[in-house]
Image 1 (spheres, helix red, strand yellow):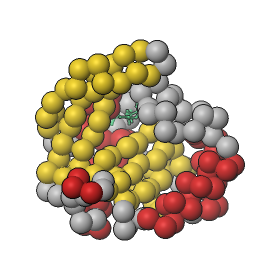
Image 2 (spheres, protein in one colour; image 1 turned 180 degrees about the vertical axis):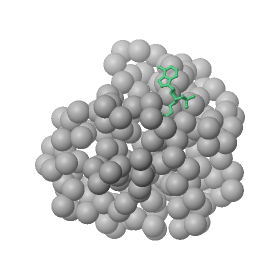
Image 3 (cartoon, helix red, strand yellow; image 1 turned 90 degrees about the horizontal axis):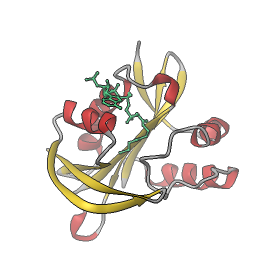
Length: 166
Ligand SMILES: CC(C)(COP(=O)(O)OP(=O)(O)OC[C@H]1O[C@@H](n2cnc3c(N)ncnc32)[C@H](O)[C@@H]1OP(=O)(O)O)[C@@H](O)C(=O)NCCC(=O)NCCS
């Protein structure tokens, strides 16, 4: 299985819409529009075109020629501008094959090369064991836990703060 990270293009729009309306959102921020519309995709693909390799790195995850997920590292602003935040999700049918562990390895290399950052932060809701493992397998350190910091679908979660320093 060859796991490749590739740049997004406007030709991916229909697939992006389908994927974002299929994924499991239980541990994702509400920033991701729901439902994910044509307008949502157009706005996001334009944002990516403007900011890729300037304020963030944004890649589709491709396995055997098929898009199966997305991953990004976005630079923060103001006094936090040397820091960044990683985000990712996959289609459920390809979970637990080691795909995201490899994708995170690759995006960290790209982000440290292309962006003027010295750290990458991962913010994971406490019960999201798969995501915590993905970061830990990539040598992110659990730096702290913010108690009851998240409300998602009426559930209150602790927020695990992971960091990887250049
Ligand atoms: C989190 C996510 C990206 C993981 O991707 P993935 O490709 O399945 O991850 P990997 O296979 O590389 O590694 C996951 C690890 O967690 C383990 N795992 C998966 N589900 C688990 C669970 N419920 N409990 C314990 N371990 C679990 C896997 O066995 C694997 O561990 P291993 O390498 O020791 O076998 C994927 O589940 C996803 O897209 N979830 C929805 C979106 C999301 O939560 N994004 C992250 C927000 S912070």
